[in-house]
Image 1 (cartoon, rainbow, N blue to C red):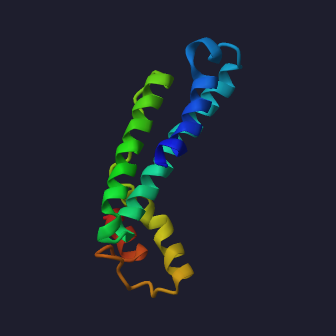
Image 2 (image 1 turned 180 degrees about the vertical axis):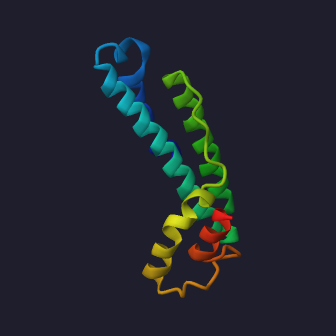
Image 3 (image 1 turned 60 degrees about the horizontal axis):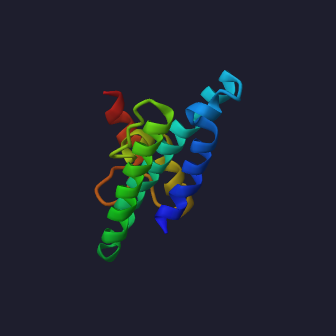
Amino acid sequence: MSLQVNAGPLAYARAFLDEATAKKYPDNKVKQLKEVFRHFVEACGHGLGINERLIKEDQQEYHDEMKANYRDLARELSIIMHEQISPVEDGMKSILPDSLHIFNAISGTPTSTTIQGIPSSSSVYDANLA
């Protein structure tokens, strides 16, 4: 299933960013699409980071498969875009300060609570400022 999910974005990348076809489009639009793909890879990494902290043991094998497919996606995009697209290995770290409070608000979790050893957003944010 995850291969099918990656197939769509890769098809778009190949259709619009392949060397032969990219020349047909304005440079600014090609650059903009590349930026969108960089953000997409980053967002996928963040999602995997969150998923890894929330899954149960019986879901670990599927999660590992998703991570492998994610790395393959980043590798394929690197080839297509002719630049290094690095997968986000620990997606939670850079988004915690800005978004964990949103998860807490949605779930009704008090802000002083931790999620599987991850402090609330205010303590993570303060630690990142130090």
